[in-house]
Length: 71
Image (cartoon, rainbow, N blue to C red; front, side, top):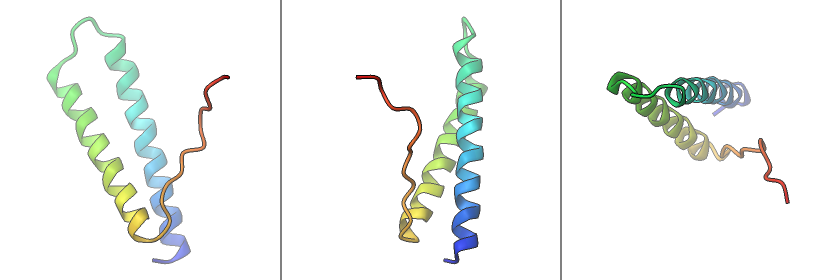
């Protein structure tokens, strides 16, 4: 896999992670969550897993360097 393809996968993963976060925020604000929204979240999580597998297969596993817990 080329460097450009790996960068594309990383950008795709970032977009999917933003989608996951947006759905989670919406779900968290509801008293009763619609099943369709939970299904959207499930599809998004599966897509992230697929991108992660592709990155691992390319020898470039995703490393999340985002939020670090406070000590």
